[in-house]
Amino acid sequence: MRTHYCGQLRAEHIGATVSLCGWVDRRRDHGGVIFVDLRDRSGIIQIVSDPERTPNSYQQAGDLRNEYVVQISGRVTKRPDDSLNPRLGTGEVEIYADRIEILNAVRKQLPFQVSTAETETVREDLRLKYRYLDLRRERMSQNLQLRHALNKTIRRYLEDTEGFIEVETPILTRSTPEGARDYLVPSRVNAGEWYALPQSPQLFKQLLMVSGCDRYYQIARCFRDEDLRADRQPEFTQLDMEMSFMSQEEILNLNEGLVYHLLKTLKDIEIPRPFPRLTYAEAMDRYGSDKPDTRYGLELVNVSDIVKDSGFKVFADAVSKGGIVKILPIPGGNDLISNVRIKPGGDLFKEAAEAGARGLAYIRVRDDGEIDTIGAIKDNLTDAQKQEILTRTGAKAGHLLLFGAGDTATVNKTLDRLRQVLGRELNLIDPNKINLLWVTDFPMFEWNADEKRLEALHHPFTAPNLDDLDDLKTA
Image (cartoon, rainbow, N blue to C red):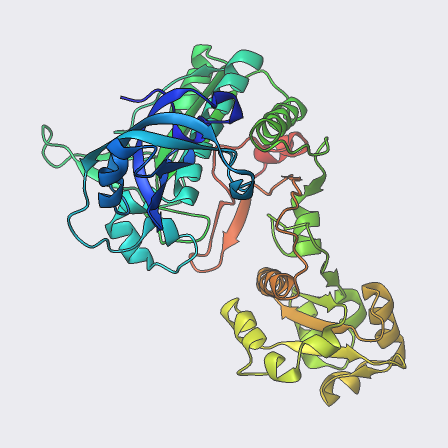
């Protein structure tokens, strides 16, 4: 039915007769000459019909409306110089339609226009209800094509360059300890028995390693019955890998090579190698997060040793109880952030409270190097302590210092949250910048205060650090 996709046509096709299929994106009648933008997943091409040059298609062209499905045959022609469209890959050419066949007409009013959905706000529930229309949008179509290209590139790199074998593992299986709730499926043939959908193929890939399949991968569907978050969904796809007889350094290098290859192949982006590395302890100390965004500064500064003997009870008590006191320094924060936002009822105070903090202390650095804050802080810090805080944080006139004081987990969570909020608000984050890094040496376990027990920080299928092996004998 078609000889080309719409987005494939270029100047080298001028003079050729082609047949295309697709959807009418827009139709315009310019004083008798009808222009139609024809769309398929590859792009858009302009179709032209007028009563003199293409009389056989003119009536059908006049009947077309948005989202009609059509087949069009005609000759590829160079556009007039004043009609060239550099924004389109096909912007040098157009097709004079010799024949137009309507394959499927739109009988009812569309819930939204596909051609303008990128620039007009369409409710998400409406997009999801009419998903077949939503997926025609350029952005969604490109997302699907990018995902396909990503999977294809992963497969070629792992198999052809690194010697991996793709193995599909079972979906209906038994429950394994992965840190989330399982989705359960009742068995029809075994009453009272249940299957669990896999949170990951962990046990199966370990079985493969023991069997001698030393380099396994699959693009795996995984299922976790947990609340929605920005980075977590009940059903998701992951690149799942396992390797035998490899050191940590070799594993990191292999994955760096894969990521570098993907960015270069799919986006023509070159990133420096080797990737920077932070230990878990360094990441938590400097950023309050084990997945820090290093595209901007605003690093946290620990001042526990400075204020542990201060007269300000909040700081001193936090350190004496085994907690910490940290500062988020904000250059220019004096002018950008008011006290109203920091105090109870303010938006930054609310962000801190939602992270578990009971309050948000601050210091403003004035032009003469003097500090401006509440009396309880100013009167209970010595001049030496004030100067050491300014020196350690690198604070200068105009800086705003936001304090977190309490148990380590809450302080890190609070200041990490504020750092992200302010990084976006102050336009410190370059959306086109890619900063990748490894975070290494994660603890095996963390303390769950609610359940009063240790639990795996990530999952229990992790080898201990070689330096800690002897501790297993006395644990």
